[in-house]
Image (cartoon, rainbow, N blue to C red):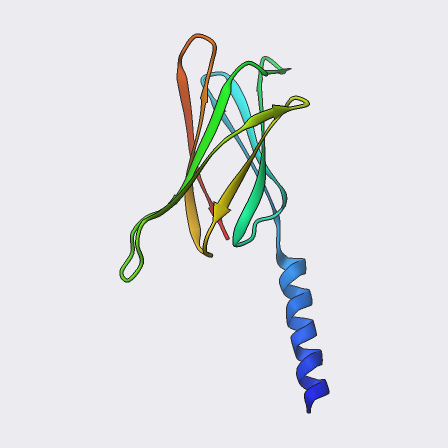
Length: 127
């Protein structure tokens, strides 16, 4: 009986991990092409996000990038958010975001260009 439970649990965990998908979302804002990726499938806890920005097919490396992930208040659950600032590493902006629970997380990805204009991209991810 214990072996059967172990086998069923093993199958469950295997299919759960195989079903996990890496985040990759693309967008465009004011002529900038933006790609938001995760280095691995999103999990409850800390997640590394990779952001690439380009304009006219050239990588943009002179902006400040930050993101806010949030989940609205629901019955029996408070509003939650996690913010982070990205750092530029080899042409890719990297940041860590902590998502404390499963569900649909909305985000606002903001980047400030040299001319002082703040561009905002909104989206959501499922965890």
